[in-house]
Amino acid sequence: MKLKTKNSLLVIVVLICVACTSQLRTLYGPIQSNLKGGYRDYKLSDSVYEISVFGNAHAAKYLIREYFLYRACELTLQENGRYFVIYGDRSLKQEVSVTGVIPVKGGYTMYNWSSNKYLNKGTIKIFSEKPENAVIYYDASLIKPQLEPNIKRPGEYGNGTSSDKKLKN
Amino acid sequence: MKWKIFLLIMGCLLLSSCGKYLRDVLTYEDICKYIKISDDTFELHIEAGFIDSETLRKLFLSRAAELTVQSGGKYFVVLRDNRVRDLDGKISEREAKLDDHMLEMLKVPQSTYLSPIQLKNQLELSNSGTIKVWNDVPPTWQFYDAALISQKMLPLAKEETRHVGKNRTLPKVTLTLLLLLAYL
Image (cartoon, rainbow over all chains, first blue to last red; front, side, top):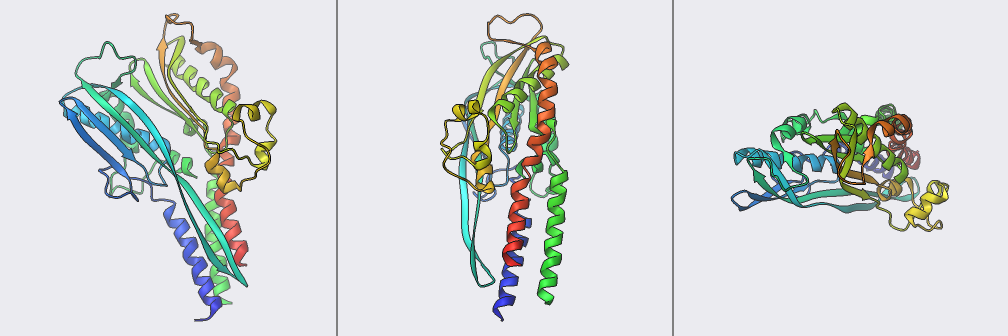
């Protein structure tokens, strides 16, 4: 194959990859791989859970927060509770970058792509009555319906909220 | 020749999608997100691409005031306040032109330069927090008057989001153009 044809093919592949990967945001579900992200939780005692939500490079920080709160609501309602309090609420960021070369006419050019991956971690305690001593408490029955439209599970992808797509642009 | 035509068509398709992004700017509602977490408490999250910390704060307080008024309250208290500045000690040429106050606050040298793509990641600022709405004066000295903020700050904040939203789309367009130019 001629060098010129090879170069053209490479450029096309890169352009298609850029276009395709821009839609692969984390979907809501248990974590399967670091590439896709997801949630993981452990039951620490009767009404206490530790929840971690891992985002991939295409998931906005706010989306990861929404997934975290949604999982907390699910666990609260599963345990027949209504309220939860978050302890050790943390949002962390990890920077990921890819560097490489693309052959162009008469040589090569370097490209660099970098993005951030977010993680939201915390321990929740579930209550059936309003927790009196907590300054900030969360009402699962109030929060869950608000988040429902933004929760995209595997197989449902394609109707991502426009605001999330915009945030990642 | 065939390949060049094919590539040009591909480039045009990609550019048209970028054009969509250019028009599809972030609105005030996209940047200033919130969740009602209990009867009188809201969790707010303010985030956009290119934004300075003063605008960010203005948006946070404006959104909080707006929610307070909408839920029938008069005052609000910020229970949790998480302001993030992800600067790495580097600054762009554009950023270097910002006012002295901003530079002093961010504590960054003016000598280093970052490309727009890197800048997007470096200058990712956000302000998240939790606010509680009160009908009467809250039992703390640190509270905000929602009516006052809504009247003075909200119109300005909404106006500023127009610029913030547009700027965020630039890195993607720049990258596409650079890729095309590099080849052609």
